[in-house]
Image (cartoon, one colour):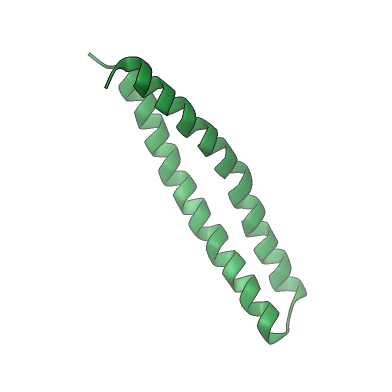
Length: 79
């Protein structure tokens, strides 16, 4: 891949990462707040679903962050 295409891909990944860094903690906190508020059967399942999605988003954000940093390092130290 040319250096410019790799750099552009890294910028796109960085923008997605910034969105994930904002969105994933919001989903997780909504899950915890809804778990505290709701005690009925159908609503508590939504709370657990939000907690699960938020936790998975946090894990994916960490993975995607390392992948984005690796893309930038590959672009920077390309021979």
